[in-house]
Image 1 (cartoon, helix red, strand yellow):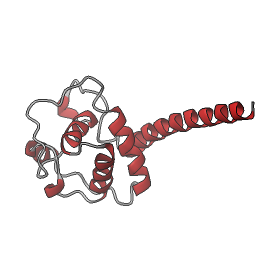
Image 2 (cartoon, rainbow, N blue to C red):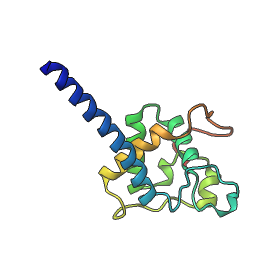
Image 3 (cartoon, rainbow, N blue to C red):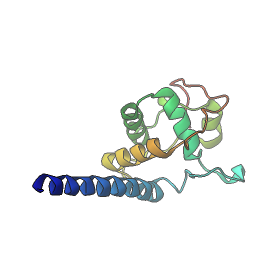
Length: 141
């Protein structure tokens, strides 16, 4: 009986933690990233100020095949973006410019939560890798 109660408590705690993690990632993204990166396919691309998150993550996942690698890249890149580290097509940098450093706007811990949430949620399940994507370290957003 005691073991059953302990397992139930542990299960409930894990469920709440994972739910809070998802909410924290989404909330942090909304607060720290959504002013530039949209989370849905825009009907009018002329209004974009940065690539949509699903495109960013498609490119990140093409270059970094594990979640740990992708989260590390996003966390480091957001604080110290460099064209030599970028993973998207050159025309994206030409159109949007290099992402400005987010130092002072977001902490490394917040970035890890955001990046983990992004990895888990984008691109949507069943979406392909996209056409014309090149996974080279000299390209990005």
